[in-house]
Image (cartoon, rainbow, N blue to C red; front, side, top):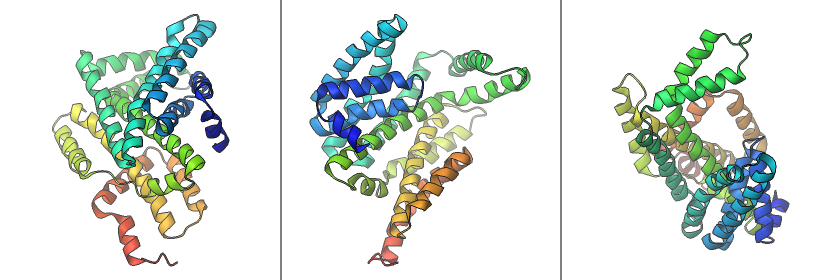
Length: 304
């Protein structure tokens, strides 16, 4: 990873090339879109938003050319690249200026909420829209011999009411992980260990601690998941990140080895979605109780 970050920082064209390649590969391996966005964020963090904008413009041109070669449609890949990269100009610059991981994550929360709001603003019926998309997509990928037609329709009906918030939460998480990756690259090159310490200290603002339960309470007044519950999904995802930071912080405070973190991530993956809820709840509780500070206060010298 350090070698890749060093290559990106060698020059503008290297950054454009890596970002464009990751964008194309993301069509096959979706998580690589995070790496593509992280390239732009790294450039902004190190060289500023103007240089980042130049990389985005050149990258869009490169993707237009690749889109023509691969699909005969110059705008297809270019639009994907723009969607991945443009938010990084804003978030990367916020992080560069403020040096506050907490603040930039909160800005990303707002962007996730905007995605949800745009769906409710532009679509006549959000649930109906997602039902149609899920119906078409599930019919194409699910084998009727494995999943019955009745079960497939039930799954679509269960998922559709949550897709607006799910899209906002996924957008927020993608932005956040891209920032984390870019910050880790920057630290590896110029400040070894710096990002790890920032992550271990991550705690979100009190306004989210108050807002999320209010949104959930407001949503409970309706029989179907409404706008407020969809927004709460983004907030819960933010506290999921704080929960992850809490685990990293506690392992550090207790002088645990990296095996604890590996075990945590394995359990996190195999325990989804229950593990997501548990980590989010832990992150939310940490917002009020500050477990890391309590552990540090009991062991101020960091003794074992």
